[in-house]
Length: 605
Image (cartoon, rainbow, N blue to C red; front, side):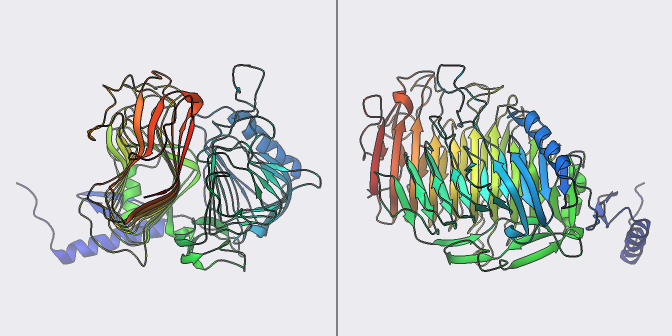
């Protein structure tokens, strides 16, 4: 016979006793009932948090030689390690330092001040293109097109007199909330390729030279020395010191203000030595940095309100913490999951250090975010496993209809990868059902190189599907998916900067063909036929059909012909003339192929 449940009063007494006992022992911050099982949630000490073995925290008393040795050791190990499991965060408490940080794969360098100028490095925080072959000559290095997955945030750098900074990056390499006292090159400085990138909420005192950068997005930044250069798609938004609007030659798209943005949350240490996470406030119609007039408005949350998640933390513990209303701080590493992380409470912060990576092992969605106000997910990577998942991440649920205009969910430096370390499979990388969501720099990538790569191997149908209304994407990169790269079905959507490469590996047009009447291949960006209002600025799609160069994509962008659907600053490129994009958008725009590798459309319609 099944034991009867205790009466409600007895259950409450038992729960209170368990909670009090766990807290008194110092091992739990609470207990969460899941049937008959009680899950312990560890307490986080904000004065002395355990941020994992791959997080290195320096203060001004740390010997300079020790700091330099540590960052050099990390750089040497990560120089070519784009598919390894190692992850690192290098954090500096407020003060002055002398250091040369050569930033390599899966490494984050960040200041722990409330203001970027609270931490100053005399030296460099740089990215070099000195490891990847350029062209056919094995002795010719300098190719930056694979300089992915690294981040510099929330500190100032003072360059030695007569020197420059080099930030030769491509996708998923944010330069965010930085103050650079000097000038910067966004390429290797001579003849190498580059395919980046993002500068956001930053101040650069000297000249910014984009060089060979194919495309670049600069948002809410102050370019004190101006900007030089363009290739195909350079977008400036809410920034000062930019070139004037001029498209397509040079290809500068300038948007005066940023309509609605919340900057990325970040970790900092207060005057008492306690760790907190600062969550910047939502801002409207902005220009320039959030911190130029002093500390930005926002909310500080003590790290005591976070579960510090390590790679061996069970998902059940993570979900128990979320049920208690705790936030999450993921330490550097690859976190293998046997269940879905479920974010259900409004205003929850999920923050990763060192590009913390979540990998599903059992075919379940990695993370779901409920249709609630104000969730922030930042600094995370979602890496598909060998068992196919329907989607790596879902924001809201199908049919979500609530308005979140006053307090939207926002995604900052959130990256997705299908294949590369090995076989990865996911039908869709990201589905957005909630209204008003903000995307602030995302790269959704079906791998084109590495291990586990092939048309029938790292399978992935779509990168991004947007069903919610009033969704805004800033700095959206989506590449190599096998059908539409991006599908946008919600009303009043806006995209500011879009970079796409179509899949390299379609075997032929019979295999790779969309249902759109009279077309070949799949467009990079599809606005649903039922949509009445949509805007996009500074958008590009490129082809490189190296498996079969005779493959044709009829269009880069496929949209309904309606007055409220408007695009500005479009480009289609046939990289090296390998493959064909017949039209840039619908049936407008010249063919991009070997004779005419670049095709522009200034406005549509």
